Length: 162
Image (cartoon, rainbow, N blue to C red; front, side, top):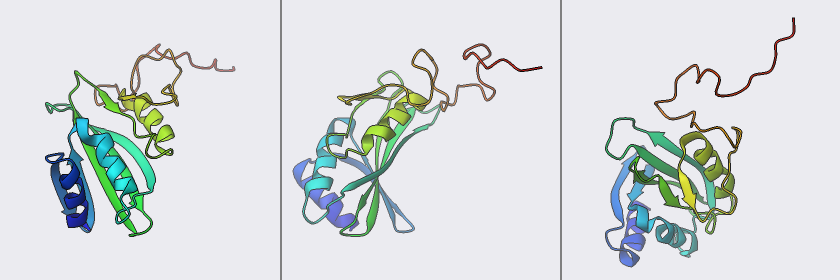
């Protein structure tokens, strides 16, 4: 399956796949940011691949790497009973990436959650707003620089009854 996926993407977008890693029958591909949407469309619409389900979207904060964040899409092909991770690396100076909600509707909630927790901006998302945190909250709790105990006073807490 790995060879077919790489062949299909590389045939239509040469040089889009930066890296592919297979470990214990799991395949991860890293694509260039500018090729993410086109690669997703190929994976979704190709009759041989048919990755028709987006199972999850998240991010990794590497803290000290030049490309500090990696956005990870977990997609699945029912036809092939195959799961694939699509990764895109982002520098902290530009945390925007194209939304894949036009390809997979289920990416909507997952992208909102990733925006809320990491501050990744998904361009052309139909409803990008906070998911767990209040709209006015200015921090991103899953970033490595967010204090473990939170930021005192950043959120009003309920009064304790005596």
